[in-house]
Image (spheres, rainbow, N blue to C red):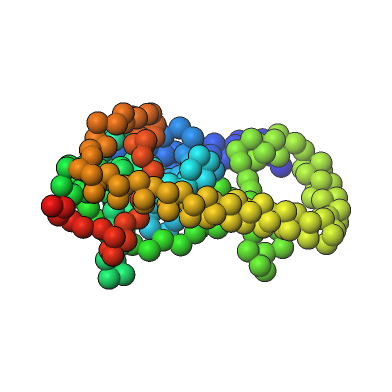
Length: 266
């Protein structure tokens, strides 16, 4: 390859790396870089979740790193104008994210709050604004906490980055040809099957554990919130935590059943 050809390849490499880096950067609603978040899609703009989260198709996240909260986190659009950015709780904590907690489940329809529902002495309400509905979300395989999960029919999972590409440019063409021919014949079906099995088993185990914890936790907190509402208590006086980059109120998710929940308490 001529020096002119090598120079052109380097220019193209730098340009592609710059574009990829910009597309992979996540931002909070105020424009700050959301460190520790990764995109949930390969599209130009997408929602972002933490590296241990499960990305959902409704642009929200399931946090498996601490407790199984549903979260609104970040977006690769620095202006948050893309329809792929989270559409709820943007104004609650603009320099971070917000937990999304179930308020009521009536006639098959769930309503949610930004933060933990509270009691005002007569009824349970959202701490920030009005309650809202959330579209059903499906897990997105291949991103964030499920980045290493491969679907049936995919023999291998590959990833590229700027550092590995840069190394290949600096090497000679003969060395590159040698490495290519060597690697193509060295991997066997046994190692591929083992890698796929581990990739599928670990994330599914995380999901199963999160579901078990969620069920036990939900039942406990449901009883707690009902007791507060029936006695006229006000958990607003309980300490609320505001952390950066993630804002979570200290209470836990509570799904209130219609048969046990009264909007107005005498």
